[in-house]
Amino acid sequence: MSNKIEIKPIAYVRNSRKEPTDDYWAEIVSEIELVDDFDVEAFDTIETFSHLHIIYHFHKAEKVVIGAGHPRGNKEYPKVGIFAQRKKDRPNHLGLTTVKLLKHTGRKLTVSHLDAIDGTPIVDIKPVLKEFLPNDEIKQPDWSSDLMKKYWE
Image 1: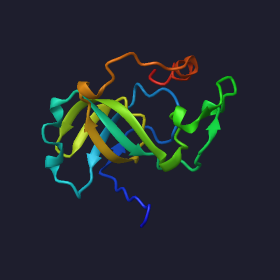
Image 2: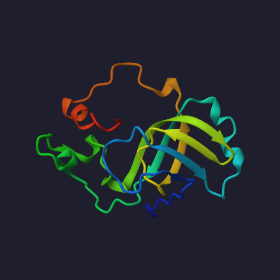
Image 3: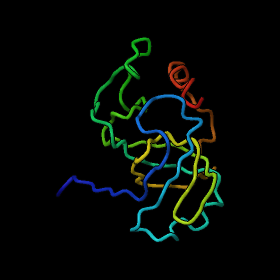
């Protein structure tokens, strides 16, 4: 029995951000274009949703962290496990972001708030359903809010 998992891109990101950087994503508008293997019908009625979950591959990440470290290498932040942060150097190099759907045209989605660079492979897209969001208070440590203060500027 093999533990191998094969995941193929279903789409790719097109935008102006060429290199992975941590902050200032608010102005980036991205196009997500479906690969030719999928019928355009895969996007049928997607425009009836305001937001989408985008699962993508950090294709330029080179390291893998399997233990703990200081987020962004900042020793002012506590040392935390890889699964207690959202860095790109994680096992399997998978990212997840909730985006706002601005437009759907044929094989393309135009979105905002996607923190993925040009050429990023998309491995899945799911509509945001209120019923899947937490219905209680979301809790997080203070360092994480500090780390994110310029992310969506």
